[in-house]
Image (cartoon, rainbow, N blue to C red; front, side, top):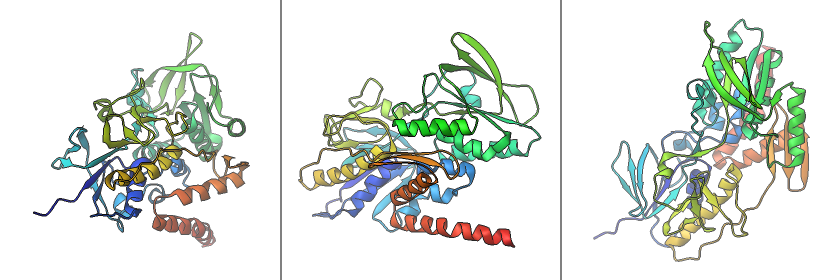
Amino acid sequence: MQQQPLRIGILGGGFGGLYTALRLNQLVWEGPRPEIVLIDKSDRFVFSPLLYELVTGEMQAWEVAPPYEELLANTGVVFIKDEITGIDVASHTVHLAHRTALKCDRLVLALGGKTPPTDIPGVKEHALPFRTLTDAHHLQQRLRHLEQSDREHIRVVIVGGGYTGVELACKLADRLGQRGRIRIVDRGSEILKGSPPFNREAAKQALSDRQIWLDFDTEIEAIHPEAMLPPQRFATALRYKGQVDTISADLVLWTVGTAVGELIQNLPLPKTAQGRVQVEPTLQVPGFPSCFALGDATDCIDATGQMLPATGQVALQQADFCGWNVWASLNDRPLLPFRYQPLGEMLSLGVDAATLTGLGLQLTGPGAYLARRLAYLYRLPTLQHQLTVGLNWLTRPLLNHLVQET
Protein backbone atom coordinates (compact mmCIF):
# COMPACT_ATOMS: atom_id res chain seq x y z
CA MET A 1 0.00 0.00 0.00
CA GLN A 2 1.43 3.34 -1.05
CA GLN A 3 2.01 5.75 1.81
CA GLN A 4 0.26 9.11 1.63
CA PRO A 5 2.69 12.03 1.24
CA LEU A 6 3.18 14.29 4.22
CA ARG A 7 1.27 17.57 4.22
CA ILE A 8 2.25 20.94 5.68
CA GLY A 9 -0.69 23.27 6.23
CA ILE A 10 0.13 26.99 6.34
CA LEU A 11 -2.83 29.01 7.56
CA GLY A 12 -2.75 32.64 6.46
CA GLY A 13 -1.04 34.22 3.47
CA GLY A 14 0.49 37.35 4.95
CA PHE A 15 4.20 37.96 5.41
CA GLY A 16 4.59 35.04 7.83
CA GLY A 17 2.56 32.50 5.86
CA LEU A 18 3.54 33.24 2.26
CA TYR A 19 7.25 33.64 2.96
CA THR A 20 7.29 30.44 5.07
CA ALA A 21 5.73 28.59 2.12
CA LEU A 22 8.29 30.02 -0.31
CA ARG A 23 11.14 29.13 2.06
CA LEU A 24 9.90 25.54 2.39
CA ASN A 25 9.64 25.28 -1.37
CA GLN A 26 13.34 26.23 -1.73
CA LEU A 27 14.61 23.50 0.62
CA VAL A 28 15.87 20.12 -0.54
CA TRP A 29 13.97 17.22 1.02
CA GLU A 30 15.81 14.06 1.98
CA GLY A 31 12.77 11.84 1.49
CA PRO A 32 9.52 12.21 -0.46
CA ARG A 33 8.62 15.86 -0.86
CA PRO A 34 5.63 16.81 1.30
CA GLU A 35 2.64 18.69 -0.02
CA ILE A 36 2.88 22.36 0.99
CA VAL A 37 -0.58 23.94 1.23
CA LEU A 38 -1.16 27.67 1.75
CA ILE A 39 -4.71 28.68 2.76
CA ASP A 40 -6.12 32.21 2.75
CA LYS A 41 -9.62 33.65 2.28
CA SER A 42 -8.28 36.31 -0.09
CA ASP A 43 -6.93 35.63 -3.57
CA ARG A 44 -4.19 38.27 -3.26
CA PHE A 45 -1.15 38.79 -1.09
CA VAL A 46 -0.86 42.36 0.21
CA PHE A 47 2.60 43.90 0.65
CA SER A 48 1.23 46.17 3.36
CA PRO A 49 4.15 48.68 3.69
CA LEU A 50 3.39 49.82 0.14
CA LEU A 51 -0.39 50.01 0.56
CA TYR A 52 -0.14 53.78 1.16
CA GLU A 53 1.20 54.26 -2.37
CA LEU A 54 -2.20 53.27 -3.76
CA VAL A 55 -3.75 56.35 -2.13
CA THR A 56 -1.52 58.71 -4.13
CA GLY A 57 -1.34 56.64 -7.32
CA GLU A 58 2.42 56.13 -6.96
CA MET A 59 1.87 52.40 -7.38
CA GLN A 60 -0.79 50.17 -8.90
CA ALA A 61 -2.80 47.42 -7.22
CA TRP A 62 -1.09 44.59 -9.11
CA GLU A 63 2.29 45.76 -7.80
CA VAL A 64 1.21 45.97 -4.15
CA ALA A 65 -1.22 43.03 -4.15
CA PRO A 66 -0.29 40.29 -6.66
CA PRO A 67 -2.52 37.16 -6.86
CA TYR A 68 -1.29 34.11 -4.96
CA GLU A 69 -1.82 31.97 -8.05
CA GLU A 70 0.62 34.19 -9.94
CA LEU A 71 3.24 34.21 -7.16
CA LEU A 72 3.07 30.44 -6.67
CA ALA A 73 2.69 29.44 -10.34
CA ASN A 74 6.22 28.03 -10.69
CA THR A 75 6.50 26.52 -7.23
CA GLY A 76 5.35 23.30 -5.61
CA VAL A 77 3.07 25.19 -3.22
CA VAL A 78 -0.67 24.48 -3.48
CA PHE A 79 -2.86 27.52 -2.85
CA ILE A 80 -6.39 27.11 -1.49
CA LYS A 81 -8.67 30.14 -1.45
CA ASP A 82 -11.16 29.44 1.31
CA GLU A 83 -12.27 30.60 4.72
CA ILE A 84 -10.91 28.66 7.69
CA THR A 85 -13.83 27.90 10.01
CA GLY A 86 -12.02 25.85 12.63
CA ILE A 87 -8.68 24.32 13.62
CA ASP A 88 -8.15 21.12 15.61
CA VAL A 89 -4.54 21.48 16.72
CA ALA A 90 -4.50 18.08 18.44
CA SER A 91 -5.30 16.20 15.20
CA HIS A 92 -3.77 18.84 12.87
CA THR A 93 -7.09 19.19 11.06
CA VAL A 94 -8.20 22.38 9.31
CA HIS A 95 -11.92 22.90 8.68
CA LEU A 96 -12.87 24.98 5.66
CA ALA A 97 -16.09 26.70 4.62
CA HIS A 98 -16.33 25.23 1.11
CA ARG A 99 -14.15 22.10 1.15
CA THR A 100 -13.71 18.95 3.15
CA ALA A 101 -11.48 19.14 6.22
CA LEU A 102 -7.75 19.04 5.56
CA LYS A 103 -5.54 16.73 7.64
CA CYS A 104 -1.96 17.94 8.02
CA ASP A 105 1.26 16.57 9.52
CA ARG A 106 2.53 20.04 10.42
CA LEU A 107 0.56 23.21 11.03
CA VAL A 108 1.85 26.76 10.65
CA LEU A 109 -0.41 29.40 12.20
CA ALA A 110 0.16 32.71 10.43
CA LEU A 111 -3.32 34.20 10.60
CA GLY A 112 -2.21 37.75 11.36
CA GLY A 113 -4.36 40.29 13.15
CA LYS A 114 -7.37 42.49 12.59
CA THR A 115 -8.54 45.98 13.44
CA PRO A 116 -9.56 45.88 17.11
CA PRO A 117 -13.31 46.01 17.75
CA THR A 118 -14.70 48.94 19.70
CA ASP A 119 -18.01 49.84 21.29
CA ILE A 120 -17.62 53.58 20.63
CA PRO A 121 -20.89 54.69 18.99
CA GLY A 122 -20.63 55.09 15.22
CA VAL A 123 -17.09 53.80 14.72
CA LYS A 124 -18.05 50.45 13.18
CA GLU A 125 -20.62 52.07 10.88
CA HIS A 126 -18.81 55.22 9.79
CA ALA A 127 -15.02 54.96 10.33
CA LEU A 128 -12.84 53.35 7.66
CA PRO A 129 -10.00 50.99 8.62
CA PHE A 130 -6.80 50.86 6.58
CA ARG A 131 -5.37 47.35 6.64
CA THR A 132 -6.41 45.48 3.48
CA LEU A 133 -6.59 46.04 -0.27
CA THR A 134 -10.37 46.37 0.08
CA ASP A 135 -9.85 49.11 2.69
CA ALA A 136 -7.55 50.98 0.29
CA HIS A 137 -10.12 50.71 -2.52
CA HIS A 138 -12.90 51.99 -0.25
CA LEU A 139 -10.75 54.96 0.73
CA GLN A 140 -9.91 55.75 -2.89
CA GLN A 141 -13.59 55.64 -3.80
CA ARG A 142 -14.55 58.00 -0.98
CA LEU A 143 -11.72 60.37 -1.90
CA ARG A 144 -12.83 60.51 -5.54
CA HIS A 145 -16.39 61.40 -4.50
CA LEU A 146 -15.13 64.13 -2.21
CA GLU A 147 -12.70 65.52 -4.80
CA GLN A 148 -15.51 65.70 -7.36
CA SER A 149 -17.77 67.55 -4.93
CA ASP A 150 -17.98 71.32 -4.65
CA ARG A 151 -16.61 71.42 -1.10
CA GLU A 152 -13.89 73.95 -0.59
CA HIS A 153 -12.15 71.83 2.06
CA ILE A 154 -11.99 68.07 2.62
CA ARG A 155 -11.72 67.40 6.34
CA VAL A 156 -10.11 64.12 7.46
CA VAL A 157 -9.76 62.78 11.00
CA ILE A 158 -7.22 59.98 11.46
CA VAL A 159 -7.52 58.11 14.75
CA GLY A 160 -4.15 56.79 15.87
CA GLY A 161 -0.71 58.39 15.83
CA GLY A 162 1.23 55.21 15.09
CA TYR A 163 2.95 54.22 11.85
CA THR A 164 -0.23 53.76 9.82
CA GLY A 165 -1.75 57.03 11.00
CA VAL A 166 1.33 59.13 10.31
CA GLU A 167 2.14 57.62 6.91
CA LEU A 168 -1.47 57.82 5.80
CA ALA A 169 -1.77 61.45 6.94
CA CYS A 170 1.25 62.51 4.86
CA LYS A 171 0.03 60.68 1.75
CA LEU A 172 -3.45 62.17 2.06
CA ALA A 173 -2.05 65.67 2.57
CA ASP A 174 -0.01 65.39 -0.61
CA ARG A 175 -2.97 64.05 -2.57
CA LEU A 176 -5.50 66.62 -1.36
CA GLY A 177 -3.15 69.60 -1.43
CA GLN A 178 -4.75 72.93 -0.48
CA ARG A 179 -8.18 71.33 -0.10
CA GLY A 180 -7.02 68.98 2.64
CA ARG A 181 -7.66 69.66 6.32
CA ILE A 182 -6.18 66.71 8.20
CA ARG A 183 -5.82 66.00 11.90
CA ILE A 184 -4.43 63.05 13.83
CA VAL A 185 -6.20 62.14 17.07
CA ASP A 186 -4.31 60.03 19.61
CA ARG A 187 -5.03 59.19 23.24
CA GLY A 188 -1.29 59.30 24.04
CA SER A 189 1.11 62.22 24.25
CA GLU A 190 3.44 61.38 21.36
CA ILE A 191 3.38 60.04 17.81
CA LEU A 192 5.30 56.92 16.78
CA LYS A 193 6.00 55.56 20.26
CA GLY A 194 9.07 53.31 20.14
CA SER A 195 10.30 54.74 16.85
CA PRO A 196 13.94 55.91 16.64
CA PRO A 197 14.22 59.62 17.60
CA PHE A 198 15.57 60.57 14.15
CA ASN A 199 12.53 59.08 12.39
CA ARG A 200 10.12 60.55 14.92
CA GLU A 201 11.56 64.05 14.48
CA ALA A 202 11.50 63.72 10.69
CA ALA A 203 7.85 62.64 10.90
CA LYS A 204 6.97 65.61 13.12
CA GLN A 205 8.58 67.94 10.61
CA ALA A 206 6.73 66.31 7.70
CA LEU A 207 3.40 66.68 9.53
CA SER A 208 4.18 70.29 10.39
CA ASP A 209 5.17 71.11 6.80
CA ARG A 210 1.80 69.77 5.63
CA GLN A 211 -0.12 71.65 8.35
CA ILE A 212 -1.53 68.45 9.85
CA TRP A 213 -3.04 69.03 13.29
CA LEU A 214 -2.07 66.77 16.18
CA ASP A 215 -4.62 66.26 18.97
CA PHE A 216 -2.88 64.40 21.82
CA ASP A 217 -4.51 63.08 25.01
CA THR A 218 -7.72 62.97 22.98
CA GLU A 219 -10.23 60.18 22.42
CA ILE A 220 -13.14 59.67 20.06
CA GLU A 221 -16.39 59.84 21.99
CA ALA A 222 -18.79 59.13 19.11
CA ILE A 223 -19.26 59.49 15.35
CA HIS A 224 -22.68 60.47 13.98
CA PRO A 225 -23.73 61.23 10.40
CA GLU A 226 -24.81 64.78 9.74
CA ALA A 227 -28.15 65.36 8.01
CA MET A 228 -27.06 66.54 4.58
CA LEU A 229 -26.80 65.36 0.98
CA PRO A 230 -23.95 63.02 -0.11
CA PRO A 231 -21.06 62.93 0.15
CA GLN A 232 -21.84 62.39 3.81
CA ARG A 233 -20.28 64.37 6.63
CA PHE A 234 -19.79 63.10 10.14
CA ALA A 235 -20.10 64.85 13.49
CA THR A 236 -17.05 63.56 15.38
CA ALA A 237 -17.06 64.07 19.15
CA LEU A 238 -13.57 64.41 20.69
CA ARG A 239 -12.91 64.17 24.42
CA TYR A 240 -9.94 66.12 25.77
CA LYS A 241 -9.35 66.39 29.54
CA GLY A 242 -12.99 65.80 30.32
CA GLN A 243 -14.28 68.29 27.75
CA VAL A 244 -16.11 67.15 24.61
CA ASP A 245 -15.83 69.13 21.40
CA THR A 246 -17.64 68.09 18.20
CA ILE A 247 -16.06 68.74 14.83
CA SER A 248 -17.26 68.02 11.31
CA ALA A 249 -15.35 65.49 9.17
CA ASP A 250 -15.74 64.18 5.65
CA LEU A 251 -13.68 61.09 6.46
CA VAL A 252 -12.79 59.31 9.69
CA LEU A 253 -9.98 56.76 9.38
CA TRP A 254 -9.41 54.19 12.15
CA THR A 255 -5.78 53.06 12.47
CA VAL A 256 -5.69 51.94 16.10
CA GLY A 257 -3.71 48.82 16.96
CA THR A 258 -4.02 45.13 16.08
CA ALA A 259 -6.24 42.50 17.65
CA VAL A 260 -6.17 38.70 17.51
CA GLY A 261 -8.85 37.09 15.34
CA GLU A 262 -11.59 34.80 16.61
CA LEU A 263 -9.93 31.65 15.26
CA ILE A 264 -6.85 32.19 17.41
CA GLN A 265 -8.92 33.29 20.39
CA ASN A 266 -10.83 29.99 20.35
CA LEU A 267 -7.80 27.69 20.10
CA PRO A 268 -6.78 25.76 23.25
CA LEU A 269 -3.20 27.03 23.06
CA PRO A 270 -1.08 28.81 25.68
CA LYS A 271 -1.64 32.54 25.29
CA THR A 272 -0.40 35.79 26.77
CA ALA A 273 -2.55 38.30 28.63
CA GLN A 274 -3.18 40.04 25.29
CA GLY A 275 -4.62 36.83 23.82
CA ARG A 276 -1.68 36.16 21.51
CA VAL A 277 -0.25 32.67 21.10
CA GLN A 278 2.91 31.97 23.07
CA VAL A 279 5.71 30.51 21.00
CA GLU A 280 9.11 29.13 21.87
CA PRO A 281 12.28 30.49 20.21
CA THR A 282 11.93 27.62 17.70
CA LEU A 283 8.51 29.10 16.81
CA GLN A 284 6.79 25.95 18.11
CA VAL A 285 3.75 26.29 20.35
CA PRO A 286 4.52 24.93 23.86
CA GLY A 287 2.94 21.51 24.25
CA PHE A 288 2.27 21.20 20.49
CA PRO A 289 5.63 20.42 18.82
CA SER A 290 4.00 19.86 15.41
CA CYS A 291 2.34 23.27 15.49
CA PHE A 292 4.34 26.39 14.60
CA ALA A 293 3.15 29.99 14.85
CA LEU A 294 4.45 33.39 13.77
CA GLY A 295 3.37 36.91 12.98
CA ASP A 296 0.92 39.37 14.53
CA ALA A 297 -1.09 36.74 16.44
CA THR A 298 1.92 35.58 18.47
CA ASP A 299 4.14 36.82 21.25
CA CYS A 300 7.63 35.58 20.54
CA ILE A 301 10.78 35.74 22.67
CA ASP A 302 13.81 35.13 20.49
CA ALA A 303 17.05 33.35 21.34
CA THR A 304 18.45 36.48 23.02
CA GLY A 305 15.46 36.79 25.34
CA GLN A 306 13.94 39.92 23.80
CA MET A 307 10.18 40.22 23.29
CA LEU A 308 9.58 41.11 19.66
CA PRO A 309 7.08 43.61 18.25
CA ALA A 310 4.37 42.55 15.82
CA THR A 311 5.86 44.05 12.65
CA GLY A 312 6.31 42.93 9.06
CA GLN A 313 10.09 42.92 9.52
CA VAL A 314 9.79 40.45 12.41
CA ALA A 315 7.38 38.23 10.46
CA LEU A 316 9.68 38.16 7.43
CA GLN A 317 12.63 37.03 9.52
CA GLN A 318 10.49 34.54 11.42
CA ALA A 319 9.41 32.99 8.11
CA ASP A 320 12.98 31.99 7.25
CA PHE A 321 13.40 30.24 10.59
CA CYS A 322 9.91 28.75 10.54
CA GLY A 323 10.43 27.24 7.09
CA TRP A 324 13.74 25.75 8.16
CA ASN A 325 12.38 24.41 11.46
CA VAL A 326 9.35 22.77 9.85
CA TRP A 327 11.75 21.13 7.39
CA ALA A 328 14.09 20.10 10.22
CA SER A 329 11.24 18.60 12.27
CA LEU A 330 10.37 16.32 9.34
CA ASN A 331 13.97 15.38 8.58
CA ASP A 332 15.24 14.61 12.09
CA ARG A 333 17.47 17.66 12.11
CA PRO A 334 18.01 20.07 15.01
CA LEU A 335 15.73 23.09 15.09
CA LEU A 336 17.20 26.58 15.20
CA PRO A 337 16.15 29.19 17.78
CA PHE A 338 14.92 32.37 16.15
CA ARG A 339 17.36 35.24 16.46
CA TYR A 340 15.99 38.61 15.36
CA GLN A 341 18.29 41.04 13.56
CA PRO A 342 16.93 44.62 13.71
CA LEU A 343 17.57 46.16 10.30
CA GLY A 344 16.24 49.61 11.07
CA GLU A 345 13.01 51.38 10.29
CA MET A 346 11.59 53.11 7.22
CA LEU A 347 8.62 55.47 7.01
CA SER A 348 6.89 56.99 4.01
CA LEU A 349 6.28 60.69 4.64
CA GLY A 350 4.34 61.70 1.55
CA VAL A 351 4.98 61.60 -2.19
CA ASP A 352 8.71 61.28 -2.94
CA ALA A 353 9.62 61.62 0.75
CA ALA A 354 10.55 59.18 3.50
CA THR A 355 12.81 58.67 6.49
CA LEU A 356 15.16 55.79 7.23
CA THR A 357 17.23 54.72 10.22
CA GLY A 358 19.29 51.54 10.34
CA LEU A 359 22.54 49.81 9.48
CA GLY A 360 24.45 52.94 10.43
CA LEU A 361 22.38 55.19 8.15
CA GLN A 362 20.08 58.11 8.88
CA LEU A 363 18.35 59.49 5.81
CA THR A 364 15.37 61.68 5.13
CA GLY A 365 13.80 63.19 2.04
CA PRO A 366 14.08 61.90 -1.57
CA GLY A 367 17.21 59.82 -0.80
CA ALA A 368 15.37 57.93 1.90
CA TYR A 369 12.38 57.54 -0.42
CA LEU A 370 14.57 55.87 -3.07
CA ALA A 371 16.30 53.65 -0.48
CA ARG A 372 12.92 52.59 0.91
CA ARG A 373 11.63 51.75 -2.56
CA LEU A 374 14.70 49.65 -3.38
CA ALA A 375 14.61 47.85 -0.02
CA TYR A 376 10.97 46.91 -0.50
CA LEU A 377 11.57 45.91 -4.12
CA TYR A 378 14.16 43.44 -2.84
CA ARG A 379 11.66 42.16 -0.26
CA LEU A 380 8.85 41.46 -2.73
CA PRO A 381 8.01 37.75 -2.54
CA THR A 382 9.37 36.31 -5.79
CA LEU A 383 12.12 37.18 -8.26
CA GLN A 384 9.60 37.33 -11.12
CA HIS A 385 7.46 39.86 -9.26
CA GLN A 386 10.55 41.88 -8.32
CA LEU A 387 11.64 42.07 -11.96
CA THR A 388 8.17 42.97 -13.24
CA VAL A 389 7.63 45.71 -10.65
CA GLY A 390 11.18 47.04 -11.03
CA LEU A 391 10.80 47.27 -14.80
CA ASN A 392 7.50 49.12 -14.38
CA TRP A 393 9.14 51.62 -12.00
CA LEU A 394 11.86 52.29 -14.58
CA THR A 395 9.60 52.66 -17.61
CA ARG A 396 6.56 54.36 -16.06
CA PRO A 397 8.09 57.90 -15.88
CA LEU A 398 9.08 57.64 -19.56
CA LEU A 399 5.61 56.46 -20.59
CA ASN A 400 3.98 59.26 -18.58
CA HIS A 401 6.23 61.79 -20.27
CA LEU A 402 5.34 60.45 -23.74
CA VAL A 403 1.62 60.62 -22.90
CA GLN A 404 1.98 64.24 -21.79
CA GLU A 405 3.87 65.12 -24.97
CA THR A 406 1.08 63.69 -27.16
